[in-house]
Image (cartoon, rainbow, N blue to C red; front, side, top):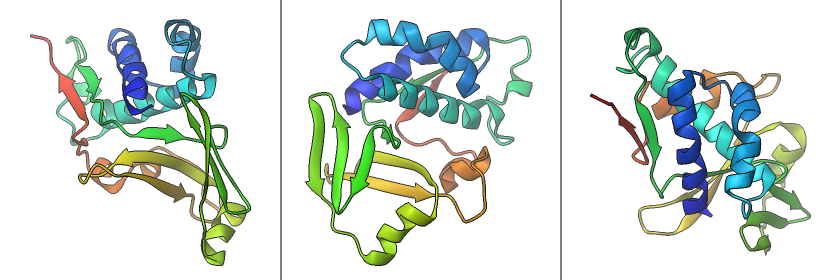
Length: 183
């Protein structure tokens, strides 16, 4: 799934570069149907999640004030191409992951995987009291996978910078993202 997700992201990245647009809704309109045709084995919602991942990463690369690739520094130049490594995390949402009565259901390329996820009462209450911002499946350095759940603070809506991990808030790119500048 992680490699397939990276393939989706890398198929979408040239569209961002060519159109100089990384707005999630616009990318969805430009690319969703062609990505579904190009990757029929990957579920429709996972295509939407890849569009989200590319949009989110592109915001850091092209809009963060500290980025050397900020769009204002690229006037008259082609945008660099963003490349996602096979170690790219996979983003899930309420359509591709669910939690009910201590059971986690997770989208995979081979169908849904179900497993017990015992939670403390306080942790489970977050799922009912707060909006889930995102769920990220990533591989740790010890080659084990982990799911990271991120919730919106109470009474806050999902806006640009606050939806990014702290390293990306200060303009740092994760190891799984490379920016290729054409000369």
